[in-house]
Amino acid sequence: MLYLENINHEKEQILPELRHVTKKDPNNDGTYVGGNRDEKYCSYCNQQGAFTQPVFTFVEMQAFCKEKMKDMGFPGFLVGLFAKGIPKLERWNT
Image (cartoon, rainbow, N blue to C red):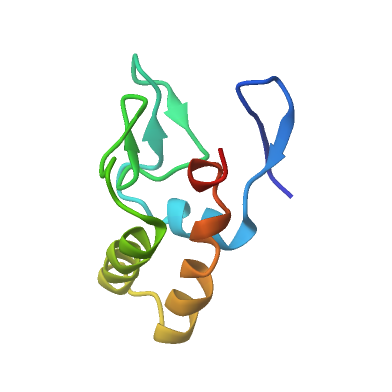
């Protein structure tokens, strides 16, 4: 399991199904302000500490991510499986 420290200094598990997506991210991961890697999100979701699509609902983000995953060559059944984890991200649970 992969864990990252959240803003409250608590360990938070990265959803394993979404970690596969970030491994195929051409930019490796999202970034914090200043450019340090943010392994919690891919570069399609987060850059320089800000969400790239700040007004997206999780349903819109699922559609966006499904398209990106298809572009990356993920099989259709995995696209659906991985996208199911998006509503569980901290972004929609704060």
